[in-house]
Image 1 (cartoon, one colour):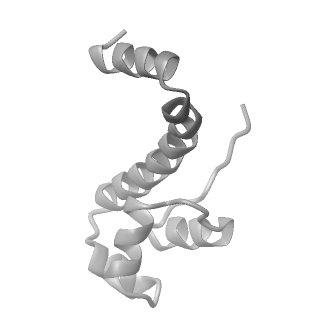
Image 2 (cartoon, rainbow, N blue to C red):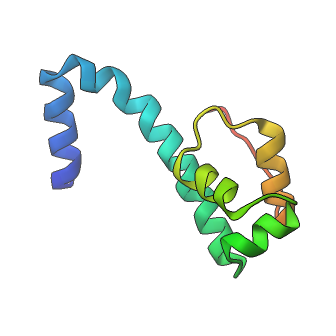
Length: 91
């Protein structure tokens, strides 16, 4: 277990407010990171992706940095614009 994982585990045990919000916040953060990585792997800038999606760079930045309450249809458009397909998994 990494030092960060140990810290998170201890903090969750002693701080109930932190524990309550951590998991949902982490999932939102993880989605944004995955979208950014996919864009970078496709060799695209935020500006280029925004042009393909007929939106602004700020919208792409907001999705990558604050992916909370993102619509499934938005995720599908994002993936298609990168030449990828969206795959969801319930585990």
